[in-house]
Length: 225
Image (cartoon, rainbow, N blue to C red; front, top):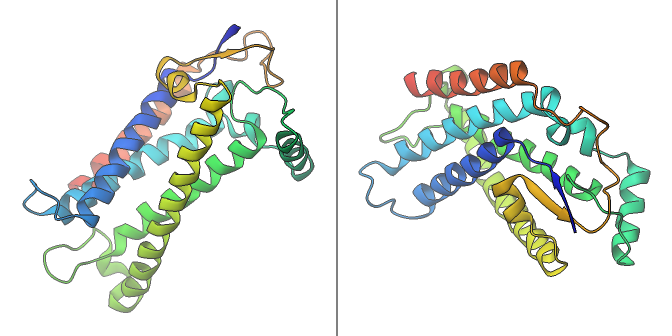
């Protein structure tokens, strides 16, 4: 087995921060939210954190390290279909980062999370809480967005279930994805097809500062509104 450094520290912090914020958002809406006095406020703040994290990740997907970039793991239809066929035959090529199927799943989940976080900015519970931009759209559109917000929450649950199932499948195949997302290192028996050229896998620290600053600024501004 050979070890390959895949996930930079920013991707790993984003991933586990997003897991924590999304779990808190679901907890404060699907339960009574104890011990929080006003769970809807905590739900909203978790959403603001999600939106800040997503602002970072969209930028990092364009400007970040090799395996973080969308251009690295988004494959075209023919390449994606070819990978699916090889996976069914249990002869897939090894990938250090996201394989073509996993890459598209990541983008779909990011899009769903982005819609969820953005739509939440225009909602109200008609009792204790009004989101920062509720007054911009009015009650009718806000109610429509509330319906989509709830529907997309169910879509997210399905996507997260598929994600967990995929992690379990890879674990049964000997690929420890959770450990890789903790350490940043993945162990592979064969060289991956998505291996970067010399020097291409380095973190771009200037762009990292820009992306992190953007994410923090979005979160802070929304909490302050």
